[in-house]
Image 1 (spheres, rainbow, N blue to C red):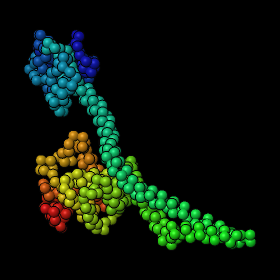
Image 2: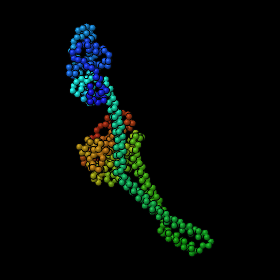
Image 3: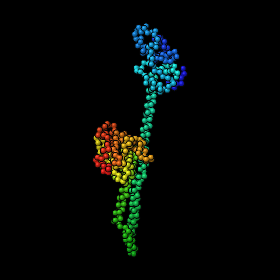
Image 4: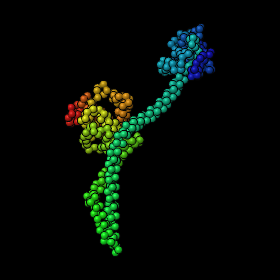
Length: 459
């Protein structure tokens, strides 16, 4: 018999000859006892057209013959009286997946029968063994598990790439702002250095004149008129240069220059700390320092637009990845600044503890978030911004970062009043169970008008 079957089905098929419906029970018993049928749990029974009508299992036959008189009583009766008239029948024309689905869905336990293969026209083709199907299922499950493991690795890699891409996108948006922030102190440092150079030139001229006068006074051959001329020159220089006040100004110029360089150093250090790619690095971190870093890096978005108010309660250091927390804080602060459409913007930053969690609250008096957007605010690629202004990944990645740290991020918002984000991080490492009810309670919009938040005063 030939059939257009796939290779896996060919491996499952055993073309064992069937039994005819009118064969006696004794003849069937002899067939089972003859050589070559040791593997079969059952034999198929067919009609005159070679179409399967049932199965006779070895197990059912043994139960019939347990009684020593059974062979005498039933031995001459036709086998169709004792068969299972509802065998599992599958077609060779079906796909391997369909065959596996049919067999596994109809299999009965304990497994005491095989199943029947038929040709596309319904004629008997051979037997299939349930054990072989189960092995094939196991093999496919192994392949799928391997594929899932590979897909999981690719997803994690893509997730890490997205996190870093979003961070780089945020950095790219801040490049112009940071450059401006650096140019401001750099400008007056340059001006101060130029002024100091001019003053030092005057000092050099005055010192050179004093040296000439000193040498003239020591020389026996000096002309009194020359001495007088040198004194007159020094007098003229001193009219343009007041040593006491100008030296004090010089010290102030250097002091201002040092202050400007310190500002530049702080901006560069904050930017460096923010842009670190050590995603897995975890350390005991002072979250207040992270807030200050985010404020420094995002200063261009906040200045001239919002007034920063800080209410920092003492909090313990927490185990976390500082660069990832920086990314979360900067994203929320930037979103807050973008949500403020008036000139009296306020941003309230608070730190406090609740149970076994350290909390950071970021509250603005912006436009708020409508109810239709709140439910989807943490979904990947969901954004309420105009095309080209946002990727919709910032809050999604921020949510994932905080969750990976064993913490939580929630928000309360009122349209036209403002929005408050609360970030909670465990004081212990995420591996420890910290299901503290007080840290998991919902953050309701009523939280916006308690403890005199900035929105309550502006509403």
